[in-house]
Length: 571
Ligand SMILES: Nc1ncnc2c1ncn2[C@@H]1O[C@H](COP(=O)(O)OP(=O)(O)O)[C@@H](O)[C@H]1O
Ligand SMILES: [Mg+2]
Image (cartoon, rainbow, N blue to C red; front, side, top):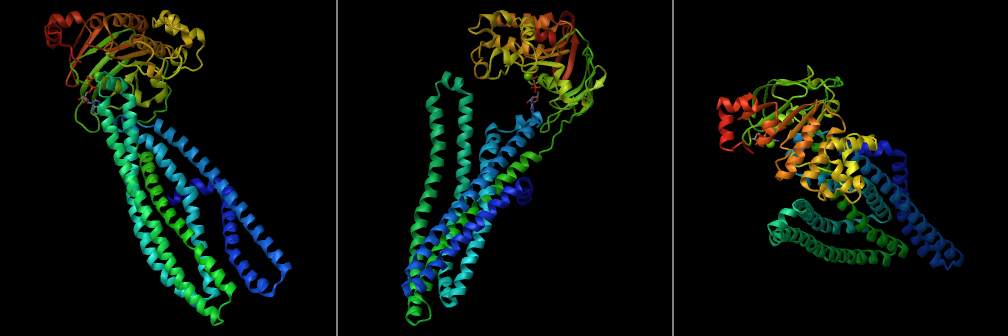
């Protein structure tokens, strides 16, 4: 946390930070000087009845507090400015890191937690860095200064005063520990509420279709209730703490007044001196409280910082090869590829497969056979455990990731469209594409006609995740989006599995048109697609069991033929 503080906060912004800290210090000094002036006022001016000096000193007090106000403002403003800049930078850096994460990271982590890193944790850090750390140090200085001045004034009275302090410290310390613990619980509960809301938003259709609003409401209420309970505990603690501390302080003050009063009567202390002394004592609790709060906030900031460190330090496993992908026709070879995800064993075994440009390869097999894993490997979302994948003769691990992925038009079962217009979505991978190019891609994907029939044609918004379009329309826009980059390879993972038969026919038609001249892999269990392919690869338990044309495999009468006969082609 402190190296971070130094490197990310002080070094980059040092002029502002230095001015801010200096202002804070000046404000404190101004605050410290006030009681001394009051002492002068009472002991010298009032006692002597010097009216001229009275004007002078009261004006001085006004100026002093004015200065204090100005310095406080400069400090507060500059720190807020630097804090905001820091968090803005950190958010940007974290977003870059997030985007460079392996695909596995997104599969294995909960969205809500990642979001909370970007919101809650960064806010905690901002608080710690731009408020708590400076306050901690300067208020500590402040308290030390006050104590020294008090001792200088009257060491005996100071001793009496200090004797009353430990009680207050004990009580405050005890409460602080408790509130910190509850604070953590509260953070946790709030994160859970956020995560839950996020899920509910995503699954609105499911909740509605199953009429589970009541149930979701109850779950939500439970979580909210827990958070509220913890919040209440916190408030109750505070409600006890404040009057308790005030009571203890009042007793302490009474003792001090009694002792100090005796000194005044004995002539050991002036009236002004005692007054100033009391003003200092009254000024102790506020910085003490700030120090305690700063310490708590620092602890929370440190925990948040550790979480962010952990997020940033998780190692990548997919590395950029650096070599620009050669302009080839898209000859794809799987050479003895075996693979497993980190947490399990043996997903794919010794896959050998060669797909030539223009060929349509259908991959079929039971659910869980490893078909999507083949697609993940070709996209380099993961790397094989052994063996290698070669495109136009080059191992894809040697290639620049972006240039490799750009050659592959990838279509999923449920296409993800972004909030925006049809045109923006088609252009997503090629922001500089001309309108003519967008239209070309849409025609290739058989989408042009229905797009023109939309209320605003290409400028029609698709809605959140494409919700304003039908499944078949979304899929054809996704195909256009893939085609606009003129990829040498098309990779389709169950592209029609979620569609009705009419949309399926339309989408298949656009796939057939799109696949002309490209190496096409299509993961499917649709018989019509299998029949239209050049070669069928039957995958079971991570092995290629049979391969050949649909007709050949039927004749062979093996597993594939049985699956076709039973209409059990998986998925
Ligand atoms: N991201 C992942 N992490 C761990 N295991 C996974 C992951 N994705 C899939 N699997 C496992 O790998 C196996 C093959 O999955 P998959 O390739 O998706 O099969 P298919 O697409 O043929 O249905 C399954 O047993 C599945 O549980
Ligand atoms: Mg799959």
